[in-house]
Length: 153
Image 1: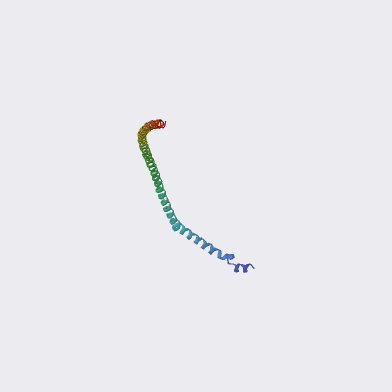
Image 2: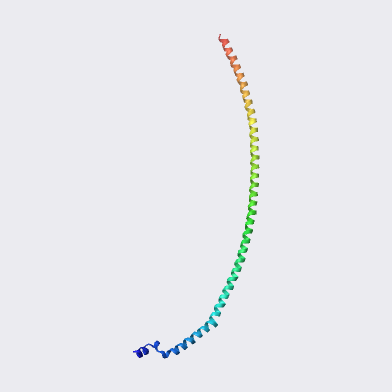
């Protein structure tokens, strides 16, 4: 049975072991040499190029970040100065508007005072005229009443 099993299953046939080990070693050495001489150097070059590219991009990124921070500081300075100018313009406009409004109110107050004086003087004259007219009318009425009383009796 052992001879049948060894002839039927070649992996258990010891006569082939030497050649298989030889070819295993030859293939392993060739594959190792191929990897060591061709594949690994190419992969190393690719990795070095990637690392160089990444380093370059990191440097450019750091320069861009520094430039961005500088620009942000400049923008903040410009914003502050513009805000100060805007506040100054607003305060000047408020002062101008306030003085203009005060002048207009003063003019209206003066005109109103003048009109009040004119109308109060006219009203006073009208009252005096009414009093005079009333006195004259009452005097005429009294004379008429006296005259009619005298004539009837």
